[in-house]
Image (cartoon, rainbow over all chains, first blue to last red; front, side, top):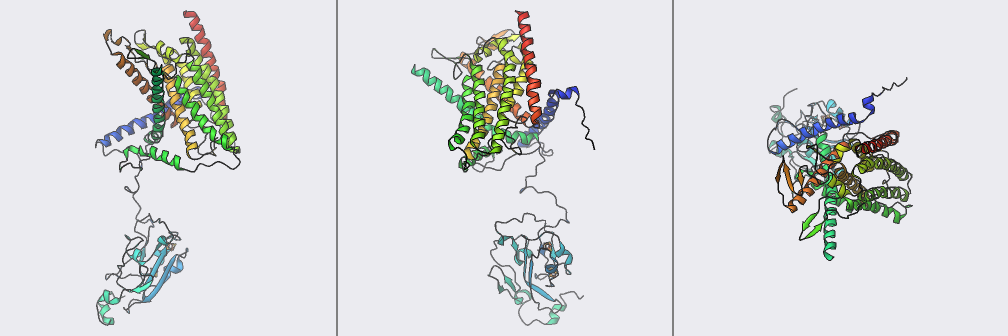
Length: 215
Length: 359
Ligand code: SF4
Ligand code: SF4
């Protein structure tokens, strides 16, 4: 294919008129923007903007609701994870970045629950398969949190504290989870008890029947 | 005698202070003006005492960064020449300011103080000589780095600077013919007064063609966009590719100092230097009425007028720099040799004819 070059007209060949028309355009932007900037300083013309810049940490762009962002684990009414420890998400995860250790749940209607649930965001590819795979709608990626960068690889790993409460980020100070879990804050020891969640006394199966909707 | 030396030193100090600070301010101007022209905000995150001050702290942060960065000399480079090059570059750009008259003479305590660092009667030649010597800094930088890319950049730079110097000199010839002197102070004096009662007798009105030739060639001399082939900051790599830290900063500074020098020259040659239309030693001529002005104030007004014109030129050069894309190398050479040079020669011939007819 032959590339056809457009012949320049005489005025274009002279450079100068073209340079002036270019300068005219940039000058127009310069003076209009300068005027608006100065008006802003005086507190005027707040509606017109002199720049297309979004001042990032203070201003954020609108994000689509379906955008896949930082993960969170959903909660039941009493504050325990909705996750039943089925390992579907861990199995489907193409990046192999989910680590779940399942534990026995006192409620016979609930299969299991995670005593540990980690997602390594340093490996996650944000494919959203974990959300798709979950049978319990226990994991979602709708926090709209994008600034997940951290200073160390360890800090990129979210544990259950951060997943259950998306406002948290390492370093964590104190554990807020009541149910028994391998607590990263306490060197992976099991902390918390079901008593703190459901009250003292032996757990009877009919205690839960009224609380959990029957399937 | 001793007073003469002190006064000269003070004037030289004042000029250098002004030029260096203006060059520093150029880094701020460069960021902010380009930002405003391109609908952006520009660097504004550095703070001084918690204040953003329109991004001015960024210039200071830049300077601190330049000074604290590692100064790296490549293994095979000649350390002496490698260090010398940036100093040569900035030196020749700075000393050229000695020839620029920035005000009429000031009468102070019965002493006539010439507002020009060095009263040379070939000031114009002197400045062009210094501008040409600047190319040594460039070629030395490329040569001493022992890097093929730096050397190629230096070759491009010297080819460009030498080509455009010819157009520059030929372009200026017209203005020298009209004023009949190489003394810049005399040239500025000759630009006082009005032609036909309304038009200031500035070089731009007498020699408009020479002005455009001068502007183009001078911009090429400063090695900034659209003539930044020697540097090609982002892609083709220039002569200072092997420089870091403050030595790189000095090349950067040279660019800005040269821009200011060109602004000063354009003001002096074509925009009446320190002249203000209507103002003369006798006073301000306001439609036939003469308002007397104190001689000291008169001199200071001249300095202010000169400064203002220089600032406007700096702003204009910045606007041009952020408007035009870079030339291709063949376009650059064609523009210099096939357009600017013949036009400059034609301008000289026509000016000569007109002068011969008028006299
Ligand atoms: S989004 Fe994809 S990669 Fe990330 S945790 Fe879920 S399944 Fe794994
Ligand atoms: S798929 Fe859902 S319920 Fe199953 S382990 Fe993952 S989060 Fe828990």
